[in-house]
Length: 390
Image (cartoon, rainbow, N blue to C red; front, side, top):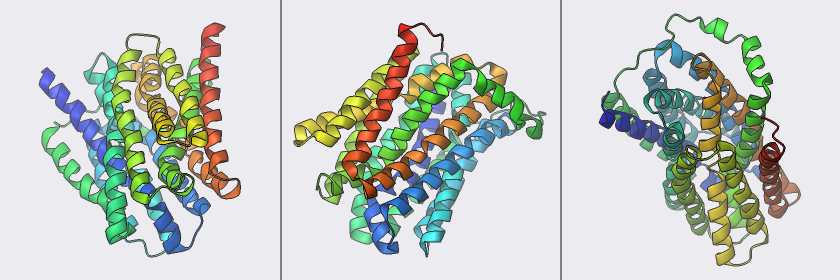
């Protein structure tokens, strides 16, 4: 296969990730408007977002298995198409209960994308750290554009139009991907999906110390990512006292840094031990979240955003390390299962931070995130210093 087509696969997988991510990220900038419209608390919206991310997590596991059975292209297209449909339903939600239901549907549909796309890229590239980093940059690029546009559309036309942006982006992505990406043959077309869903072999994977350690690190990183994606805009608006538009700009700046650092950290992890790259990311998170809480100038807060954005690039080196560890037979079900575990547990970040913001204030909520990243950095450095072999 020629390199130009390989690059086009990488670009279009990234574009598909971008489309599924926009639909979820347009919610955060209009959280205050949603809480006001439905007369609910930050905790309630945080719980709805946690439900969305949990559904996203749960669909990771079967997506890898069905991609082995039916081919990655078909599952990626299903993910993008469901994202477009669910975005329209979410925008039209007549009550908070239906808002919660459609948010969960959105998460489940979007969650079908990531594992098949990663599997497809692993088949195409040898330097998987860089490929995973570029693919992962679809999320921060979405974060660059979605918050500003959603904040503007929400302030001018209302929050429903802001949420409808998810469908506006996902539908063209679906059409371009279907047009340009060739059908992909399934790697295990005769495999029994029921047998591959058996918990025994999967739990034995999770029981391996090296994999359990990586999943634990991913849980910490995902917890911080989910909380930040859900509430960074609200933090600046309600704690730092900025306007909604300014908060959206800060949210975008955070994703700009993440968009640049994802491929860089992925490439770095192809050259140095991958866990050291993870430690760099999480150490930046300790500094960044601390500065967000104590910072009282835009210079300090700007440095905080740079550090937090860099910290959220942990996924590129950590996922590459996980793919290095799994055998080719394990990658479809194994990677999807690991993604389900750590994204599912990490989704608690939204409800925990939302609840803490209501009960103890934003400073305590974001200080918790600094502590979470410190635990992750400490675990990696301890493993290296004492040669624990994890």
